[in-house]
Length: 531
Image 1 (cartoon, one colour):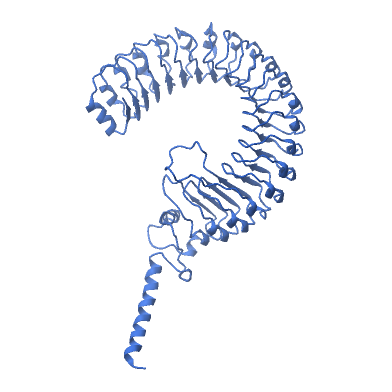
Image 2 (cartoon, helix red, strand yellow):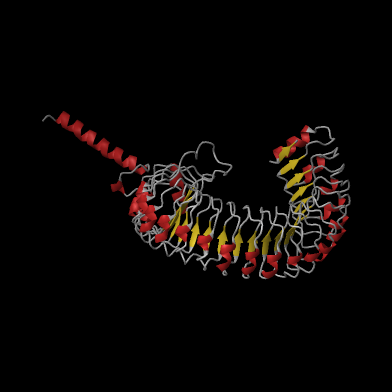
């Protein structure tokens, strides 16, 4: 062989070796180099940050001691691939925030994983998880249909339907697969150690596979297509059961679940719940938005701490007189007139009675433990009893026919106050309410707001549809973030420029000449102006 061809071969070999070395150094390594290949540059940035490493490639030994790792949401990064995570062999806990990840194949190598939490990605195929035999906790939450503020088109059509790859994960104790399109639960019969199961927001109608899960203590089946709940009657260890928004017409099969402490049945078609009277350990019961008109059996639940009967045609709440441990009662959008059964309920902290037919609230006298009270939408004849409820932090009296608010002057603990849709003209009694953070006074007859200048902790103030001409007194409200003053008689909006923390202001339908300079300055300060 001549020297010339030989030298060419040597030269070519050197070039190839050098190229491979250079290629590896730039982070596109073959495995033998010890450099981890990250297909997604944003994932590499997350890893670099977790290692406090400013630059250069990531070597396998650098991640060997990691036992926990988290990938943040798309608001910080836009991660499409988790290739590279297969090198994190000792990881036990992995959290993946909302991103655009669809392929879980790299996780198949992480056989020491015990906890895997994946939120709002593009997951459809669970096959790579079948090898993760040490998993104790698994959460894969799909995207709720009501979620806002997300990049358009990024989340459509990505749901899990087949859960059969999970069949061998016998150590699973906690499983959450919500907001998917799962209809078949047969695989769960092979997961005998499950204690918590959440398959809310799916397409489930058949619960028969759950009969095998006798160790379940927490079961969430919200928003499915369930009519028959008879398979649940043998789950005697259940303490929490959520059946909100299904297609139930009866609940007799739940009567054997005497260990239940929390039972949620809102949004079904129930008319009678008498069969639940054996559930004497209940502490929280939600039967809202059904068709229940009478519920005398509720008096048996003497340990109840929280009860929601809202959205039912109930007019008689005498049963509540027996529920002396109640701390929270939601009974809005009903037909209630008489609230005398509430008299002496000194454990009540939260009471929501809006949109009923209540005129007499004297039974509330002496309920000094109340912190939240909503009586909006009732035609109350005498509100003076409220003046003694001095622990109130939240009060809503919208549309109660109020003309004066003198009764509020000593309620100095108030942080949230809503008085819209009344006939109030004087707000002097609010002068000392320095703890107020949210104040809503829309649609009244208010002209003078000078009193509000002393409420230094206000963050949200709504004064729409009044008779206000001057807003100078608001300039000292340095904590104010949201201000609604549409529908008034304001002529000068320059005082708004002194509100340093303002983020949103609505000024439509006033009498000022549009001051584009002021609006521009506000917008330059990142204030959203609605005009």
